Image (cartoon, rainbow, N blue to C red; front, side, top):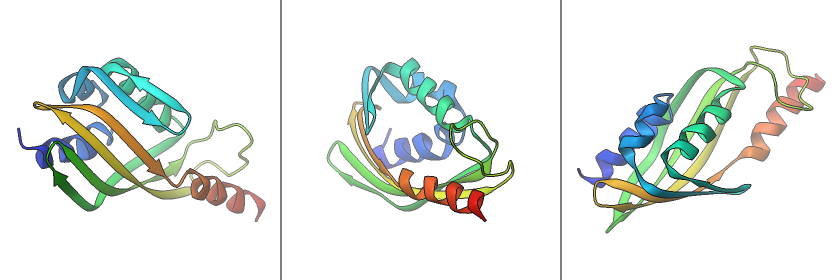
Length: 136
């Protein structure tokens, strides 16, 4: 499978909510490097994605730039949008509040699956959106 196609499946299917695809798209030894710590294996990835989606409904993930491929590496910029469903500690934003934030991915492939992942996302911007809306 070509790495650009693999990335599109990663972002537009897996991150859109088809978490079962983790077993197909990443290696058993997969390591995802998030700012808060590492996530390991397909099950760890699926769990992290479920947890990330939980506070939001009507999730839409879009590919903004890329994927840019260099050997076994791929990079891209994306946007995650949805509506706040509630449940985040310390957030007083009303249920239904629209949110949107962007980020960048770098992934390393081994064969036809991803083996390693680095992400940078605008979590601070998301927090500001929810806090700003809650204080109005």
